[in-house]
Length: 194
Image 1 (cartoon, rainbow, N blue to C red):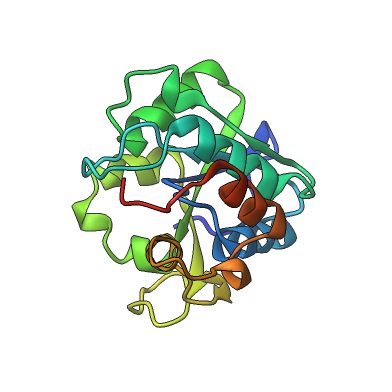
Image 2 (cartoon, rainbow, N blue to C red):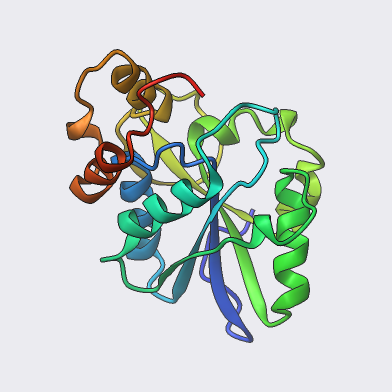
């Protein structure tokens, strides 16, 4: 696997996809890790429009806006709504192909957590994803070991934990960026199951 810098013949773009339901400090730390280790890279945060395993999620618009709040102080970072503009079916491979089609000069790298990478056999045609966008794997505490170069280890924070706390009426502020926590409160998100 290519774990070095991107090809100098095009723009280096890390694609950080996920449900971001909601985006939490673990996501923010992953983004920072990638940007710090790869100063030549731009980061594209891509919330999924349809979950590949048909899980219920908060509205796409809310998740995009929370991602914007999470990344607003990160240089070289943009939130993309591309999955709402295409028929990807929630499949990462289709999104990557569409990004490459629209931006042929981009050299893509898939930003992925160690825990998710360990489950890559469940993904649709992951071997093709690796060819189009070689993975950049960010370590995660308590995740299964994988034989790749890992970027910084990230604390074990999950969106599920955040949602569960909020549905019980408890605070999850220490797991969220302040602006994201405020947005959730303002819009009354996650107070009841989706």
